[in-house]
Image 1 (cartoon, rainbow, N blue to C red):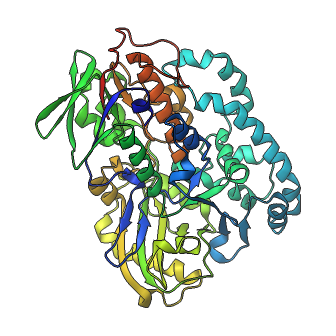
Image 2 (tube, rainbow, N blue to C red):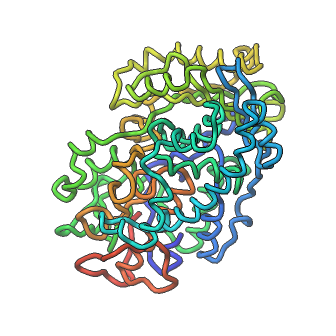
Image 3 (cartoon, rainbow, N blue to C red):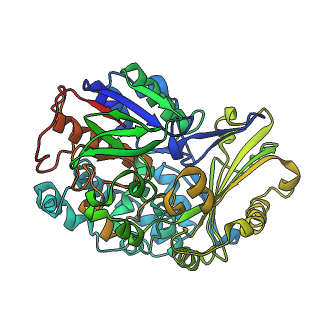
Amino acid sequence: MLLAARGARVSLLEKDGVVGGRSRRLETPEGYRFDLGPTFFLYPRILEEIFAECGERLADHVRLTRLDPQYRLVFDGGAGPVIDATPDAARMAAEIARIDPRDAAALPRFLADNRRRLALFRPILERGFASAADLLAPQVLRALPHLRPHLSLDAELKRHFRDPRTRLLFSFQSKYLGMSPFRCPGLFSILSFLEYEHGVFHPEGGCNAVAEAMARVAAKQGVAIHLGQPVDRITFQGRRANGVVVNGEKIEADAVVMNADLAHALPKLVPEALRPRWTDRKLQAARYSCSTVMLYLGVEGRFPQLPHHTILLAEQYRQGLEQIGLGKIPDEPSLYVHNPVATDPSMAPPGHSSLYLLMPVGNLRDGDVDWAAARPRLRATLLAQLVALGIPDIEARIRHERMVTPLDWQEDFAVGYGATFNLAHDLGQILHRRPGNRFGDTEHLYLVGGGTHPGSGLPVIYEGARISAGLLADDLGLPGKALPGLPSGGLPSGGLPGGGIAA
């Protein structure tokens, strides 16, 4: 969208038959519709600005409904308190008071602190990082001491909240990064703040409605979208990317943008000699997010006892996370349930529901689970959780089902090691230590997606795409408004004005 709006000729080469990647929609002949991956939308400001850059209004293309309650949290595997998280600060304080009144009194200070942190962190999210030298930028130097990146998320929250369950209320969001709150850097407390300050939204028709809207705007801008066209490899002249090979045919381009999963695609698409900082060995040794087991159920009936989003937190939550970190299936799993017909009846046939269940588990790199053999046990565990949430006859109601395990993520959806949230976001793999938006030692090859800076999560990925678009437009000398995110330096050999781009 952004590059075409700046005057570039852009061809989009998508290996699948639909747009959206992990944000695609699954549909059944019976009329059940599921989000494959992301199920809600945060911080629409970024996408609103991107659409505006293209002369469009996001609201004209996607209807976003702000949820209240945002989600329901069920603690201790169902034996603990049940909290309906709401963006209304007074009502939220009353909810927290049922856990600990002292924590309820700390809510305004937590929100105010993270309001300041987001203001400091935004300039970091909106710029590229090519090397450690970029950490010396004045806006970065001002922000880092206040972001306290040395603290884990749980340790950061201890500055505000006493009860571990209250801290979970504001730290389970680290799952959006595929990480444990006991290992995730504390600066990511802004994730839960974003929910309360800026809202949790449901796009009508599911999150793929956003990707489809972007495709329509891109096509209107002149982008040629080619579906069912997997890229065999990226071609180079020296270190400069100059095209791609599709079905044995070379397509020339002045720049290439790669949105494929890094662990899966880099070894196949980019010669190892051109990526000394991200060799095959380095990719294998990198730290990756957890994976997930998904169960998509088309069921007869509607379930008012289930809100739009429910998070069931195990009593031994931390122990489960430690098992996940070892590549295992947790003995006592936590669970996320998406019941979109609570807001959007279009997601299922009349009188039916599309239920989406997600269980965090270990990835394929860190564990040795026989996922094919584990499927019956996983199914039984997930259905038992639905029974515990108030649907005792769930088995008899099922009219459609599909399970996705880490092995399926890798084999069917090209997700390296089945790590659904890409590279982990620990201190060794953020900012300049992440694969750069302008990739490594190559020229005219750019990355977008969760594996580059700033990282995973839809709004963060869109911000990363805006950074990459700005870098590419600068390198090729494209006309038009300068986009944010240009770090120090540039390509040694300059650029080719007005060139074609393969994405």
